[in-house]
Image (cartoon, rainbow, N blue to C red):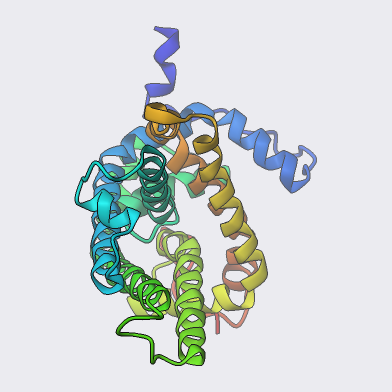
Length: 319
């Protein structure tokens, strides 16, 4: 029975000594991760049903965008052959497209652009509590925070879905138009295409950065929908380069498992990791990163609106 102790969702983990010296961030991250690894796996299992729904939605959106690309681009390319399940598609092309779909679905659900908002709020509360070394009771806190953030979580989840859908469709349309330089879109000026891809790239990165902060802010402060996005957008812009680096790290960590398997087993390792730890590990990493920023610009910011203490840490705007 000792093997299954990590599935006890009501028992809090071991704390740290009050006067223990502060480790460097890198060592503190890995120390905390290793100490709470079973609780992170438990949190991952709690969130997994919602994560599967999110993966399905992300995959569906990708396929819609891919269909638009095929329609606009007009040629008989590998994507067209894959979507039509034709035998003319080579095995390498099939595997490449499957990997791209899987990678896109995973990264857009762990950042998270596609997520069931209330459940991701509960999941984020667990991860943030582990990062900040606060007591956490997995099932109780997950259920309580999902319920208390139900309305705001739904609004954020729907907003992210709409934004993510249109950005993915826009990216597909851009790629189709730029590839069809000899067809019906041959008269589109190159500077228009440059502006289009610059806007799509900027908005896509901004959306991902906003979602680094949106759910941690939601479960930490008693904010409105407008305040939440105002805070998240400002923190995204003023920390643009560090945010970009953490997103690149996210992408690298998600891509690594795909490098170790080929052929029909390509998705085995990513699937097993996703079931046990991927959403929790990436979420833990991102919460560890944003925690200091939120503390500096919100919790410790004297100009922030902290007119009312709540059961969370505080409430307020950045400015």
